[in-house]
Image 1: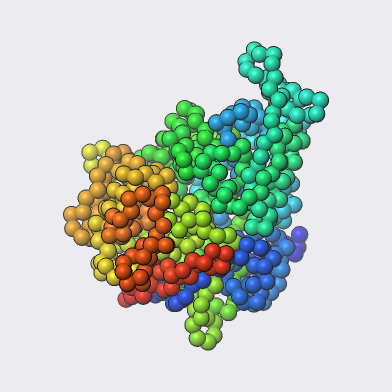
Image 2: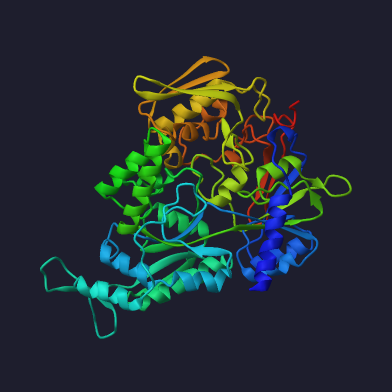
Length: 552
């Protein structure tokens, strides 16, 4: 315990003392070549970091790895509160997970406290609700399902379930029926142990716990991209998945409102419950903070009752970074692996060299209209920018492409007026205008890619009074409209106009024009896409026209 306390102290010290955040001090990026190196095996990741073959290693979960790296003087460790949640997901569209009593019993059967204690040694905590403890909207006063095989079996028995002579659960066929339906073998989808060893171990433990109450289930390990495809197609029994949520609780609407149960949509479990839809709508369209807090609390309480997924744990984010570089940015909410770091990083000594950042799996898609995984956006997030961004120290709004904005109401809806910075250009040298933002919003509204649908569904009109002014009027009022619209990645109109089928668009494989200097994977962000070699790396180069690099 003392050793654990010392390690936490070291990491916390580094993460809070490394940098005093001030957005006006940035002038970058300094890094000229960024390689996102694909290293799936966790042991290989550690060796590569220790040999200085990679310089940033994110999302370290195994306590032994954390201790090992913490004792290495050439490695800098950072820890931050995370908007992280790990869940055991269920397909509520079909039997047997459409039975509420089975979902509740499954929650009781899983020993979350022991699982977290065994696997994370204090670097995580059991999760009992649907937002992480770091969220300002976290609600702890929800119904709890303490671990107990006896209570789980009692709950099922009271609901008319029984067990056959092999110990397999049999469900009552219907209310008042004496017939029983024996559960068929099921699969729990999980990433492979090679890519995500801790996740794979959790999946095995969950399956073993469920078998302990008579659920015939086995883990089906698979490539992460294949797993996401199965989930998008709704072709699954159950799954394990970690989500990196945002500062806003209206993500609960995207995850659990029935309207979001579409192919590729975020309502993967397929819950459709009128009571829940009502309170989630109140959260989504809350007119002010007080209403938002009330709806967030009620949503979490109702979700705990309905159990569309089973929360397992939330953990801290821990990143290891090479001391051969200097300028890392860390805050209570951000470890060293963030874009702010890239604006400042430079070699601790000697000439500039390529920065190598480890990715633990392949990006599934480099199509920003279809991409959904964290690996995808680990690449795309460096290429595209939004109108506003988030202060990593306070989580408040910061101007980005937009230098300012105002919020008022018009015709009963929220009206957002953004004033863009003057002189910004795309990576191909063309000027960025309000017309690009307007076309992006209109395109997303018309074509409805699931990732963006919830953000643009309420857009009533988009206007551009001049080249640097964007006016977006919504058909409703909501406390979250600014973040939903202001946080959208903005695409170049002259590129997006060429995209007829957003699902099949392959911008990384399509040249922008005849000179073949840039692909259609082109934005206004700090880095330019150059090459993707599957199984090896994604190569990005510094955008010399990035506005922070040229700011006064």
